[in-house]
Image 1 (cartoon, rainbow, N blue to C red):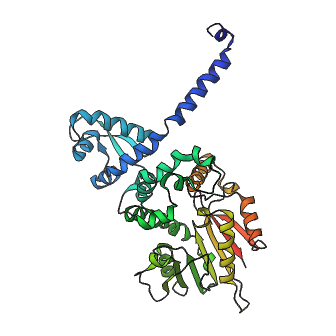
Image 2: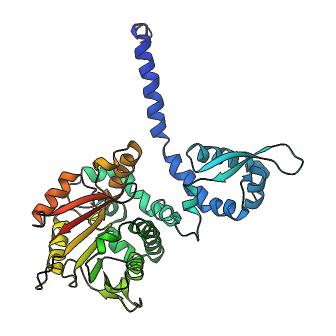
Image 3: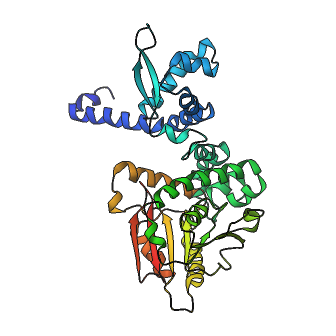
Length: 365
């Protein structure tokens, strides 16, 4: 073996070294998530936000009440998070002292400040809860399973929806996470009000507690908004003059309206179930007054050319793996087209970018 190494050229050796670095980068990538979880669990974004200015390491560990022996550990964790753009390391002066390094919030960590208008910390709570992340330890077993079990079911013995209905803590994580993501959708919809023009009514299918529907109803007071979800989800939720909550099952029927909104819904289901949902949506917006209805979909289009950036593509592919735990999928342009054709609602639709990684799909019926 030693003599064989003599025949490796300098270029081949460089490729080996490059390959090793790339391998180790992904081998230890779990630290990205675990350090992020530590940061959120310790409320560090809130601590720095409340401080009103960048915080030194000494100020941070004092607030956290960290033992002296662990100060170095906090420093190393924060250095890693700063390298991953969760914090900026800046230099500040304090009275007559020398300049010191301090941690400042970035556009990323500002999204982790609980209580802010756009806070995604609940997404961290959900996705990094061991109950959910354990599903991905079962990918090998799942891929060889001849049945139709999801990775989540392989890990937990039941599907995610049944599990959530019986576990209030994880159900709260799920509801809080979807509500936090809806805040971002509302921000995006602020510049897309044209999609609601000419509509008199809209149904937000599987709309949860109505975070997005409330925004739509307040922004467009002439528009009758219905949040449609399972009876146990909408139970005891109060509406307003133009906002109401209706319980039901989207696989059975959907309330009639000019438009149906499906936000983050279809990526949770396989093609067969998506076709069933789309057909029910088509029935709901097909009216007798010769007025064209439409289905509004907010979801991911993996190969959307207008969002063709490596970091955005990576986020889309990661989200595709996230929904694989429940047999969902993110779709390419062709896969969306195939889905619409099989649901018989493909004749007139368009796809537009909505957020950094989300797209807006309008199907005209």
